[in-house]
Amino acid sequence: MRTIKYLVVHCTATPHNTTIASIMNYWKTVLGWKNPGYHYMIKADGEIVNTFPIEQISNGVAGFNSVSIHIAYIGGIDAKGKAVDNRTPAQVASQIKLLKELKARFPNAEIKGHRDFPNVKKECPCFDVKTWLKTITLLIALCICLTGCKVSRNSQSDKNSSYKSETTTEKAEEKATTSKESDAWRLGNAYKVKGYTLFDFVGKINTDGSLEGSASSAIYSSQEQNHSEEKQSSKEQTKILKRTVKETKLVTKQVTITKTVAKTVTQNIPWWVWFAGAVAIVTALFLQPQSLIVKLKNLIK
Image (cartoon, rainbow, N blue to C red; front, side):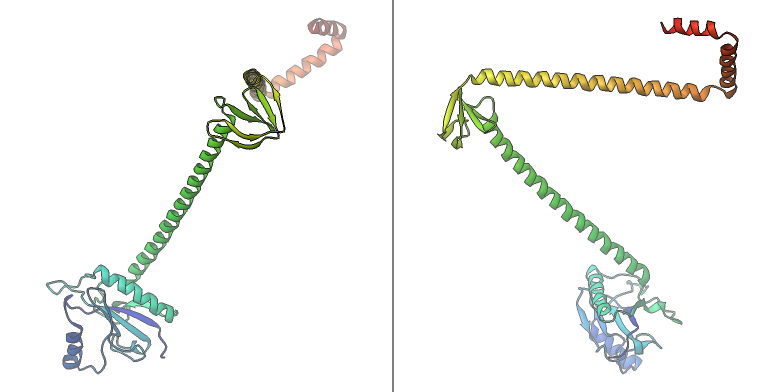
């Protein structure tokens, strides 16, 4: 296999409905070419036709054919014969597919348009290949990103559904075993049912709160009274906790305010005021120590 440096993109500069046979006949009879111009041609419906073996040299770009593989889409002009990028979506998809396959086979090959080569005055392939390749790269990255986000959302949704299902099941079981309206509920390692506390109970709790099974021993107690006492104790503990939290917040707020005021006062007093105050205190201590001590004692009292 020859060394491939370029994968060259072309257009046939013909209407979409032009047949491959007529194009190849034009090369042979009118231009007098022995070999076709392209190795591949892509029809308007996206069909890829291998018109010449890639092991052989075709007549795509003068001076670069020995190191190139040429790919053309049928089209490239409008009804007036003016150059235009009129590739169909099927042709674009086939171009991407074919270039991807050839790039995998020839990783060092550069993808270029016919007009990107030196001394070429044609507009072929009637679009900027470099810009198109960048656009394709961005679209592929976006698709991968969106696919990843969708998978992530689906996974999160499955987790949420699973968690919701588990939570619902747990709540149903809790309602059957701990509801106030039930005939029985579990307390610690024992079951309470209709005034009795059952120990080492073996059996099941029905959805209506009733028990089916047996216990090693039972002690009669007032179910409603115990439940009421437990509820009242819980309320009192909650009130105490709330009051403690409130008092703690109040103390914390007061400390914060005190610190803020002290900091503000300290920052706003000029240095000379501090100096004058210090001098006044030292003078008072030396001149009238006894009277100052008395005043301080009276102030403390």
